[in-house]
Image (cartoon, chains in turn brown, blue):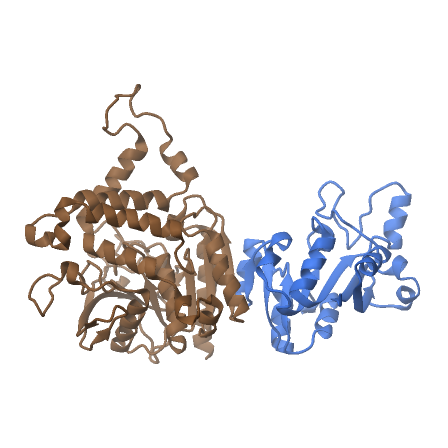
Length: 388
Length: 208
């Protein structure tokens, strides 16, 4: 795909200009909530080339607010590359010279896949609050149908950070013969009460915004921007470490003296307000509710007598688990719970603890030790296919 | 201490070769301080052994990952608590015992996690060590290459000391192998182990 980029404009290790595709899945999908979607669309981007026996495909699962645009740019003059561009491309850890990479916008998302801001064929209205609440298991099922549509029987690897890593774990447990390697990054075996508490405040911010209109705000031509903004501001606090915030923003007043009002007086206030406002322009409030609920519901051990070990005994994939030292949202201790259970379940696992500064957001950063271990792991995955 | 390279002229270092002969095929092992994964890789290929390495150094961990060896980034001093009792046939600790904060507690943990422990350490009773101490200096030998001020070795012991600890704790010594500086066995070592062994290898069990 880098062939299509104008020479000299994009870096050589970029996947270049990419175009999203809409894959229509014309089959019913039964959901954990009991409802069934008769059909659905998933929007995907792909990078690299699928080999003849379709054995080099990697699934990239996105986190809470991610989408299908993981790498490259959408036009030659597009300045903002995809959310994981530093990790996906020729010569990068997810090397598109060797792998065919599939990145999708999850079901329930707001970037083109079937979700609350698309039309419900039964009513002719936008889904809004009628869109079913989803689980990570539902996503795995929908992604398996996507794999079928793309002619991919087995993923060489599934990779994801945060909520994306949870999808990877669920893949390994639910469809063990369809995934050879599982890279679970900055994730947790399930949410803690503290994690759920943060999500609940985010949801309450949205639900209590008068412009939410019970989720039918589209029909009132408004957006619950205050609620969504607050939700995102709260999220950003959990994505950064205390030390990173201190370094980046300090706690000095922007002006020489306090103004004794509620305008922006500290750098961190300005950062959070900016992040919140920017989010409102690109994200859907109903999708935010769905994504946070999917996080809260995630607990693969629930189907196995609350034993993560029993759950992971279903898996056949080899695991690479990665955590970041400064991450307190899903701390290294949570990753070690996963590793401990994998060892008890007698599964193959390696675990890397990356020394980091930023916090949870570090899983998106090109930290050399992180990219080194991920890249070397995946190089071996690619070598396996050559020798197989 | 930088452990000697696990491969000598392309073949496994003699002490690691002894260890791999001790390990029954098909067993499950945990290698503490597994380095670049040479021993685990060798055991997986030659004895169908399954297992994991514990390694704190990110570059070495990465090297394990690159060769397909399961490696978990953790410290020996606190990394063992995540493993269930009797979850391994063997727990291996090569050339690291003397660098631990509490070797006795570490051995207790090792014998909880593994049915058997395989431990190697440099013998501080070796005649070269004694000679250098007699001359008034901390010893510098092939097995103890660091200066007193920058050595990670904080709990050195002799073969006799180690065996006294095993007796006191009622750990059974299942096997023992004592090697000279070229990591080979010999008659002098058999006759005067505490004087001529440079590296000591033990397989222990806790029957209590």
